Image (cartoon, rainbow over all chains, first blue to last red; front, top):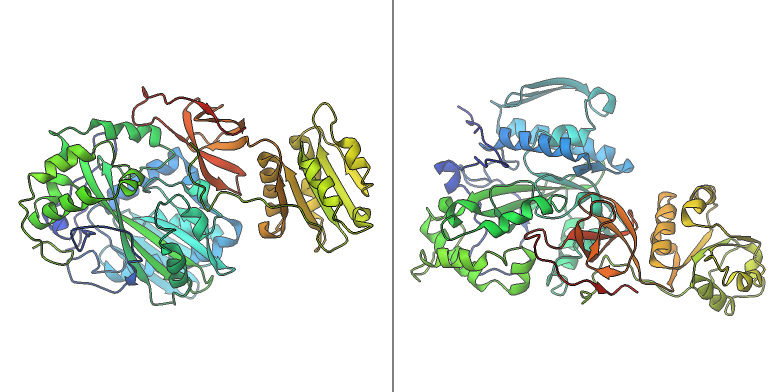
Length: 346
Length: 198
């Protein structure tokens, strides 16, 4: 058994696809026919079998291809992975968390064995079998955070907690929705969220910070966030905006279904035991419109959400240029009939 | 056309004399006037324990006014770059209780603050006062090059040549505002250039 990992790309020829099973497990982010910011944080507990919440750290059919894409991004731009000097211990915390969770959820693919500080990590999909001393950076080929996040899907931000605030002091960020770790590293919670429209006025960040600084070890939390991306491109960084930005002008009525992707982030928040930091994995899921609309409920609902989205949010999410074309295409799949409550397909 | 200000945009105050014996001022241009204005409110003998570092223009304007304050030390480096090694050493060796005052252009305040942060001084403990030009120090998010003294919106990156939107998003660590390609989606769209950071 185990996962059959797809051979696919997130750049150039864009061969990324979801299998039918992965379409049905897609974390569709809208529980009703409209969208506005909210502090939509809930406990990160295990969900139904076959969903992306079956394990708290999800590994899926895109794992190997995503790790290959990350390696390409890092080779081009090593600044996507940075850790301020005081964050090494938190990196070890993260290494432990990800090794434990991946080995627990996918024993056929990952094995962790511990003999005191002597650890052996086997990652079969990537052909890795390393023995190292926990806490001794010289025994790994990279720092602990970089080592394990080169083997884990999603971006990772490690936040230091001090002065009643959270500080973005380390991260591996190669699949981001248009924000720069290199620019934001060292900022506090309010500063790195500064460019987000509307949410500050609603008090969202004050309440979110209060929640996050109180997260306890062993009780992680999660939320969903979303945007849209043209082509299944993981690296939509501001660094490369001048390279991927032109994609947004390529959407036509004929290619909407293939080019336009809903991009959902499953964000989770975990207290780290030794450093008292918080790690914030941002796991990105992509689905093209052709795949999404195989679920009629999602097609109807997405049409209504995009149609009614406030202009500031549409601009912030970068939808402006292709929104009319997308809406026209989606409207043909919305007969106006009601949608059932909740996220899942019918 | 400047956007509403955002939380990462620095807010500057007005210099005020802090308790303590050791005071370090770093200023350029009209920042000298922030120091002389503050001096009027300072207790007698305040400048006996003060070092003033002033980057004067070529005309030496305001130097005499600062000399008149009779600080323990007046240092006049020709540029920020030439000041850097000395400032690093001063801040690294500084005792607890050193009070730091930064005044003048945003670029000067930001770069001096950057050195102080690296020396472990908390940014909220520094006194700042912005005087003079609103010109911005900008980092190109694409090539990472810093362009000094940006006065226009949009602005051209002096390193890679991309036309950049100068955002209000600011990094103390880089001492720079963020510049992001303004016409990435269609390079043929050239918005008009306005002088807005005077």
